[in-house]
Length: 149
Figure 1 (tube, rainbow, N blue to C red):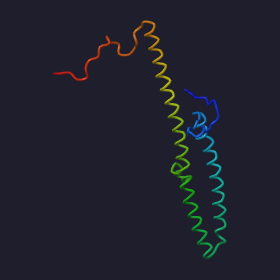
Figure 2: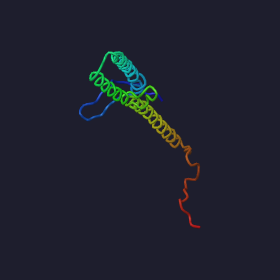
Figure 3: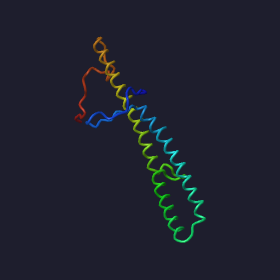
Figure 4: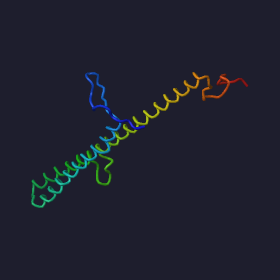
């Protein structure tokens, strides 16, 4: 089942409820956040390359300070975005994965709920029209869960 968003994404009043359609959630995770992260990664890589190119002209304390700053920059950047070898280790990748998982879970839950209500509706129609419901198929008597031997 695909849920089509019908209204804006918003927080209602002071009650703290957030409304977001499954499609919007998936689009946010799979496209919007991913594209923004890729753009930011490209910009940060360009800064890193520029700093590396400048490193040749640095000497003494300035070079050591620049290296410490570059190392710290790399550590923070890797924490946020992951590394080229392991991008999944970055916080943004985990956030995107969580949003994709939430979209899938919400959609799956909606499908199960819809299926359950449709089955109940069908069974009630069968009973109202005088038929036998499809469950159990017995005489309506249940055997006890424990029997004496």
